[in-house]
Amino acid sequence: MKLLILGSGGREHAYAHLLSKSSLTEKLFVTPGNAGMLSCAETVSIPLNDFDALYRFCAENSINTVLPGPEDPLVAGIADFFAQRNAESGLNIRVAGPDAASARLEGSKDFAKAFMERHHIPTARYKTFHAENLEEGYRFLETLNAPYVLKADGLAAGKGVVICHQLEEARATLHEMIEEQKFGSASAKVVIEEFLQGIEISVFAVSDGNTWQVLGSAKDYKRIGEGDQGPNTGGMGAVSPVPFADEAFMEKVNNRILKPSFDGLKQEGMPFRGFLFAGLMNCNGDPYVIEYNVRMGDPETEAVLPRLKTDFAAIVDGICSGTLHKLSIEMLKQTAVCVVLVSEGYPNHYEKGLAMSLPEAGPDSMIFHAGTTIKNEHLCTNGGRVLAISSLGDSIHSAASASYDLADRVEYANKYFRRDIGKDLQQDNLRA
Ligand code: AMP
Ligand code: GLY
Image (cartoon, rainbow, N blue to C red; front, side):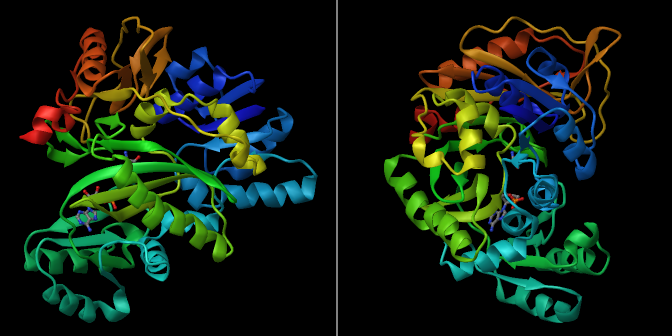
């Protein structure tokens, strides 16, 4: 395969790292990429929303497979665009991701909730409101107990969910979202749903439109501060697998959530091709869907994929060629712990362009780059999330220790990371 990866974060570096090691990969490009990918791929600079330019680049460079990292190009219909262009050109440039119809699972919360209702997939009770039935929305809030969960229907860069603890605050937020377009057109519709009490967990699966398989579970740490304090971020760390996602729990996830999701999409004429990320709440041992994403998570990918025994390139090829059934995806039993290093100030204001130096990673660890670049031949920070350091170990403790040992030896001004990734999942804490 000749591949083009879309994106520039730790997730895409993990993709590039695994693909570059496969004998199935003949040539690997990334746009826009980061400094870490320079050793395993050729980086180019084509905007991810310029499908025409992306298609031309693929055609000119004999690229036959595109692997999108983030959701935006998928929701905007890159798979449909390439299929249309292929029909015109006679080429077969494949996109390892869903078409726009099934990408609505992530692109529209209202679509996702209605889909789950149609297929009896466990999720919080909800109603959707817009400018025309806003008054009804205020009345609906009065029928719920606090806390109130309000979700912008469309993509809002991960910020579209507001949880309010007082009724007045929820009313004001609903007003701001719909009438004042707090999240632009993404909040023209708002889903209000029941608050689910439990522990969050993500489950990743892959499908070629015919069959599907589970990749694994992960827990991510979204808040900037230790003990889950402070503002939300893109993700400060991840652990895979999650100890409480045992066989019995995963069987419920498969039967109640993944199977009806993939079957439902197929029945409705939009078979899912790509990676499905189910964001779940474990409520007393029963999984409920909080959200779907139609791509892998970041930083969850950096904890899930190091555990992969199967050739990642074969999985990507299987998605595109409808041959996933020929693979039996296998994962290492070991645990991976990923610690994200950021620039102090993130997720608000932070500096970029700070000179960096990295330690040498041992065989069980990997330093994935996120916001890095090369300036005047020096490695520099280039974003809020700078690195994602992952290690494998026989326990959460040993994997975390290896990642923290490397994190401590990374040098750049204003380095910050959480020191409690995985602590809540360790046996002593679970028993406590
Ligand atoms: P989302 O962007 O849908 O993942 O939501 C962001 C965060 O809001 C989730 O990770 C949860 O922590 C929280 N959340 C979303 N929906 C609910 C819900 N129904 N009950 C409790 N927490 C929720
Ligand atoms: N870490 C959450 C996400 O990728 O959406």
